[in-house]
Length: 473
Ligand SMILES: NC(=O)C1=CN([C@@H]2O[C@H](COP(=O)(O)OP(=O)(O)OC[C@H]3O[C@@H](n4cnc5c(N)ncnc54)[C@H](O)[C@@H]3O)[C@@H](O)[C@H]2O)C=CC1
Ligand SMILES: O=C(O)[C@H]1O[C@H](OP(=O)(O)OP(=O)(O)OC[C@H]2O[C@@H](n3ccc(=O)[nH]c3=O)[C@H](O)[C@@H]2O)[C@H](O)[C@@H](O)[C@@H]1O
Image (tube, rainbow, N blue to C red; front, top):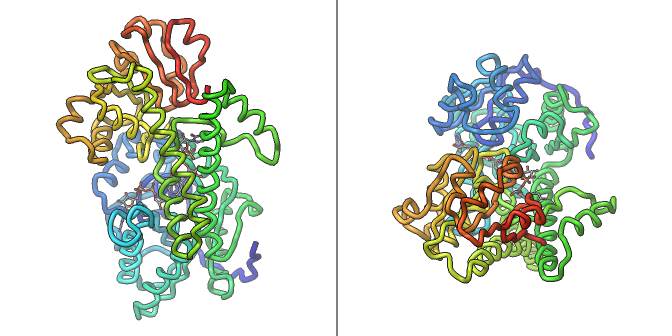
């Protein structure tokens, strides 16, 4: 790691964060809580999202994340502000975090693989236009390695005499545990221009912000390219573990081995470790797939075909896992689900979040709709319109069919009433303690249950009469 020698840091009074999403909102709320002397302005062009952040009822903020509403209640309008006044916030800020979305490109060169950097570039151009005083620009979004170079080009060619220092400070929080992850991070990573005194001073300034609550030994400083690449690498390694255990789950199903027992046995080897070995219907979330596709694209662009193929396999296996789960439902229900009612328990991509991006539930439901099933969804945190929008976005079924065949209900029990089968898609805690006996009584027989999260106990469910299919058993 780089040790910083220049300690000529700036006193920070104002921070601006562009992007009030799953990263910008929680991250800035924690900075505001831990740095009460700094004013933190979170700005976004999405007016309804900003309005929701400012909703007088703090339970209505747009992101559900345990512990978040309490911090927002404490800091909002004290030193945490949400607004659409992007120019104003840029103008006042000493540090500007860019935390906008970087989705997979859906057009042109790199379509379906490369990260779409148009939102990042728009931010850079807006900063270049508005800024009149020196600023530290922080890449918080996950970006391809060497993006800082493009930002530098745009910012340094403004000709307005403003000095910009560009830092990379990727975010490692996971949704559902974002607040714990932010309050007690494994590490904070800050990459910058280590060769110049100005670069080092900028890095030190950001170190000082985090040092309000993170022990200095856990704040790593590197060159900017290492920092950018470390973020993609971390997500690729995490996703690879899930695809690895999911690959074993299929072998388990064919051989009588139990994937949790295998995971436990290997996880006790300290070189392997026990985390991230939970077999599932496939990983979802806004980032694993997008970041690996981006890594594959970068590898290909660098002429590294074997490296690209290696990482692409993580995605191929994940797609396979979702598809084989859906196909197994149809096969087990005597090769047809046409006109049958399938209860989907859970729609979010993991528990304790209302985020549905790339959730396996979307793909499994889409497949079941193609087989003419009726799908009844229950999720404790996801809104009905989001579920319809997710299915419409795939474009395989028209809106009318989706709204006819997919019903969203308010309880798990309601979803399972008169169902032919239940699919557990999200590991919400409440699903473990449902009254499974009365659910069984209300279903068509044989009553099938497909557990894509391994939260149900095979023996006790079978004792109730269910026909039980658990991924990896
Ligand atoms: N969601 C997650 O758990 C994590 C996400 N990341 C990365 O953080 C970045 C942001 O992700 P999320 O917060 O999930 O995205 P998000 O989609 O929830 O939020 C991004 C926000 O940026 C706003 N925005 C876009 N362009 C803008 C502009 N020019 N001016 C003002 N606002 C603008 C959008 O309206 C949106 O509200 C991505 O690069 C992602 O890969 C990194 C770690 C965790
Ligand atoms: O860059 C990002 O967006 C973030 O991506 C992930 O966080 P997140 O996607 O929010 O949630 P995870 O806990 O990683 O879960 C991702 C998916 O993998 C699944 N998963 C996770 C762990 C496991 O053992 N098995 C498994 O199937 C989850 O159910 C979920 O669908 C990373 O864990 C974060 O470090 C990273 O900052």
